[in-house]
Length: 524
Image 1 (cartoon, rainbow, N blue to C red):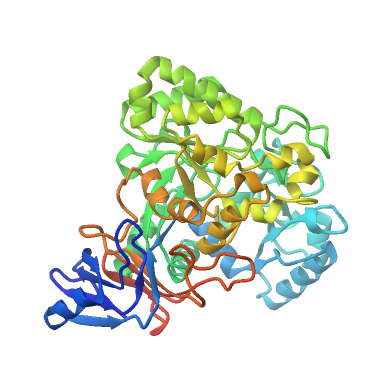
Image 2 (spheres, helix red, strand yellow; image 1 turned 30 degrees about the horizontal axis):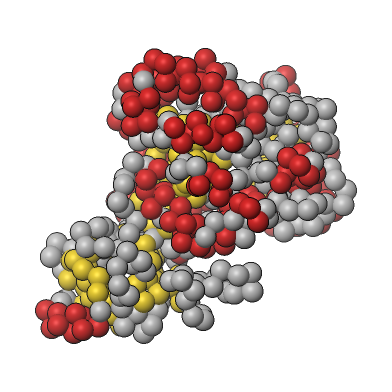
């Protein structure tokens, strides 16, 4: 629909609906090079129509800032998109049938990669095991990740590639791996995933994101997730075709051996604990369906040391934290760091927490006081919240009802940024906005405009790019064009469950098209 960004090239979009709530109703937008020159009316559009290089007739279509996904794992996402997805399996037996069918179609020596299974929705109520995988895949190397990516099932052939896996914490004896054993399984997996395959996976994930109206992604990598070399591959891909922009974080204490100028921060999946689904999140009280209280991977002293290290270097720090006991350690670490570097320096660094699903009112006050962003995933509530859902199974009704308190966080002044944690939940930003608006706990529902802001400007703010993510003069021309059926409600599409999700027709990043449905440009 539009053209590549060129210095001084002017593109006029007109006869549409431009999402610019800060000003009067707008139907047109003028883009010059990589930036927006003005947003206005048809009268203004008519006055400049003769002086532009291209005119795009929107024909009533809806234009918004492109979405920001503030938490993704790109190589894992691409791998999941290109291999076997078990997320729709409603029983263990169906999962095994699909694994067997999928394996039978592969070349004889190929490994089987699968993801997305969730035993909490199966009548059998048990996970995949090594015996299951060996029996249905004829002895192949198999890695099948649970939906939360914090545990997996492996075959005996994969175990043979690293026999030490069975001696690491998190080896459960039946082929299910978590914690360090899971990290070892992933390391063995990376040995089978060639550089070219990783490049293909990254490209597939980026193209998929572009097709969903996502213009910016926060890549939250860590040693236990994917090789640091993925950054080099991302840079190479950016030279080959227009793609969404990627902001890179590295989750390792003090950054490990990664140079500070290579990333925006040492943040993201620097894990304080695990996940609710795998029962590895650190809880104060035991799980409702287990005697376990989960695990802690970092303590308050380590957290404080990391916060101080990053603050003194002008970097963002951040942690994966889900359970209430894990958040206790983070809050203690924040308070200790505050004593060393001071509140002003700590708040100016704009540190971030990923997930932060079980915060107390006191913890929320501390986050607001110290300017910490909550990078949250509304699709978690839509997928696992509500009566009978995974949260209730694992935590009991009372704790489950308090999960993911988005409205409480927002009302307290904590900055919210929405992400998918893809491949844990899909790259589906409108679904995330809808999930926040229709939270399973009515007290925690966000207004549509607040939820949309968390999925756009909130993501930019989380990356310390204040003022980005709006359609206004002088801002980057990073936007998406949507085919929206029905009337807008308070300036946004109908977000009720009965309404169709808007379909992305085009995604533009700094004036350059990265996805165009009409020409199939950027299509995954």
